[in-house]
Amino acid sequence: MIKKFEGVRQYLFMFSMLAASTAFVFYDYDIANNQWYSLNTINFWVNHLVIVLLPLLFVASNRFKPKVSYLLPVMFSAFLYVALSGIFSWYLIEFQGVPRESTYSYVFYPEVNAVFRYLYTLIPIYFVYLIPIGVVIAMINAALILLFKRKQIDTF
Image 1 (cartoon, rainbow, N blue to C red):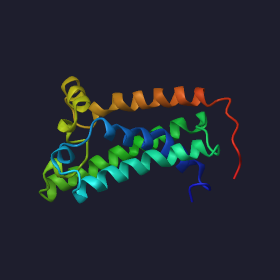
Image 2 (image 1 turned 180 degrees about the horizontal axis):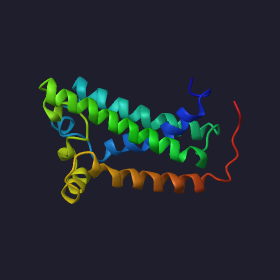
Image 3 (image 1 turned 90 degrees about the vertical axis):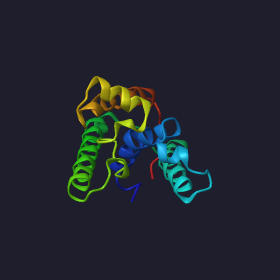
Image 4 (image 1 turned 135 degrees about the vertical axis):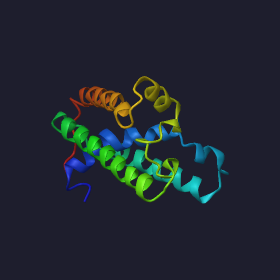
């Protein structure tokens, strides 16, 4: 599936890898308070590690490079992902009685890390406070696209 759908590979590289790599610096309070050998902690780190390593392996295998034509579709898809996550989290919070920290949605839980807390103090509106992060991710991807511009890739 991955080699067939270029858009999926671009999404993994441009959004998923960058978003998951932040877990290595700004991880959830629940993870910080768990034992390193707890199943929840191991699951958290393995999931994020795989999401980061898979796109890096694409690049290392010389079969992938980010393309400018996918930048806007990937950013729109990421926006849609966060929006839908927010809608479903709102439903769980409002109608199912789930505490907001239990949804693991950063849309309604800015206290989870220092960057989100800071952005929420600047823009105290759920979901809207995440927009500057999208701009930063788009700029990082633009820089990566320029960096990989001359790279020749092998075809599948």
